[in-house]
Image (cartoon, rainbow, N blue to C red):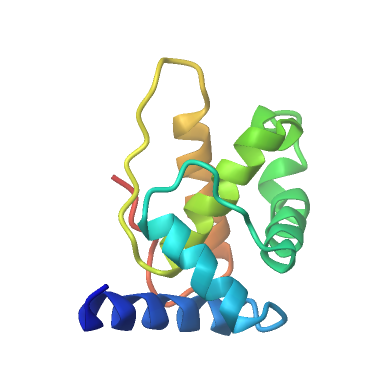
Length: 126
């Protein structure tokens, strides 16, 4: 691993730590390494998972009759958590797949969550 890769990992882990200070930095470092390594079996730290699930369930967008169905699916919630964290560490995300999986719903929800939290940068959604 080159020094620039280590620096990028460290910078991304620090961004996540600023958002999730209860999570140990070594867990964040490993999580970011999995995210950037395009690992399919990413283990999301519990501290992040619990916090983002709270955000998803308490966001006004989800309180109306048109709740996004991904809240009831563990796999889709985990994908949403990973996408949310990618937006924090400023990594581009490209969602692709068949019609009806919830790609647009996730992008809209993420945008509203990020805007609602007044984060300094918008998410990078392609």
